[in-house]
Length: 327
Ligand code: GDP
Image (cartoon, rainbow, N blue to C red; front, side, top):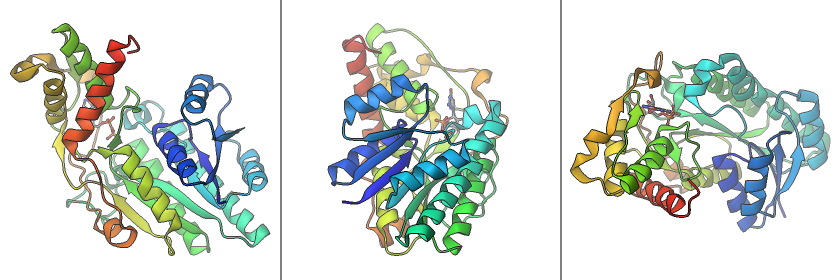
């Protein structure tokens, strides 16, 4: 039975990854931070089969020992700061956890492979944010890396160090993930912020969603599909970089409209959206949309849910939470 080690297992992607790997018969070990009690409880309630270990991305020696002790065949480095908005407030922490920590994980994997003579295959999740103000779209694996946010810069470093360790003989795949959403998205992300508010407005008939840039265009997919691409790239015979995206782009305003309509607000959706400068960013990519042809061709991957389905599933979930008094 293959053994996987997952950092960031309590996050959106980590949870879906644990579900998929356990479902396929892989033994799943996850690293959790001391103090993450609520997230750990939720994870164990949903996915009781995972084996959890205390650890910290900032503790290079501890992480090296943990990876050597667990002895995984596959490593998925999903931990780190995941919010672009948060990275503007904490740029140094973001650089450490979403950037430099990748070198720690990959170095530990490489040492394990050297010491045991067994292949250790790794997944580094890159982000569309590494492209920043791209000159062309859709973006693919050859688009120049030119980030415009602290998060994008940190992920760009991690993307490059993944290539460095691939050159050193480690199987390191990167998935350049475009935005991928689900009911498990935290409220810090615009999609979940909108769907949670839309459900409330639909139920009460009043209320306003205060948002930043309504014109930003993003390529929003269904998170479990993106996790599936990660597993496929780790198990593909050759390690490479893969854009993972739907190829469809929508504005934040279109997301808000779709969510409010789904919640039953109808044509009056415009009355429930306002721009608040507090949520504007110092700089950001105006359009992110990806071309996943390489993942389709080499990994046999394709998205299973279109924009309307992603929005619908998230709104329905938030309406259900409200009904059960759990929002
Ligand atoms: P990101 O693409 O990883 O930064 O994911 P987000 O969900 O945080 O943001 C997606 C897009 O929504 C970005 O272009 C944001 O500028 C835009 N946006 C507009 N209003 C908001 C808001 O109120 N909160 C967040 N998080 N993003 C917003």
